[in-house]
Amino acid sequence: MKLYLLDANVLITANRDYYSMEMVPVFWEWLLHMAECGHVKMPIETLEEVRDGGGKAKKDALVTWLNRADVYEKLVLQEDAAPEIVASVIAKGYAPDLDETELEEVGRDPFLIAYAVADPDNRVVVSIEVSAPAKKRANRRVPDVCHDNGVSVCNTFTMLRELGFTTAWTKPAA
Image (cartoon, rainbow, N blue to C red; front, side, top):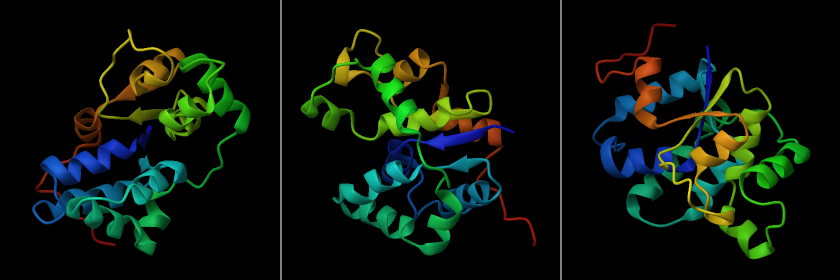
């Protein structure tokens, strides 16, 4: 089975727009179960991006959830990004000569993509970003950078369909 690597926007948007923790707790229970089973993970760099973002009440509930020890243990991908792969992702997907300001703008996305590059046959990046091939340098979108690096990418709903999410889901008995 594929390993789905989550972009920060997947959790932020799910909580804010359609699967808020208060209204659809089963989504978050299911996601944690999928993480525990090894089907869904979030790189530490991406988790830190969400936690460090601060902000609104809904996002604060998400940050509180991400700070739970059980969530951290199950959701975080237990690997270190290879610096040479991160550098290659930046060079191929953005530009080989990004300046410091552009690197800040790119954020942690190159790490997310680098984890998928490490095993492209078995890993898929999940992002709500939409392809925009005309964008250049630090403005490139995750799907386009994935494409340039030979990595599969899908949106949240594709992942949910492929993993069989339903709001009638119940956690299997231990």
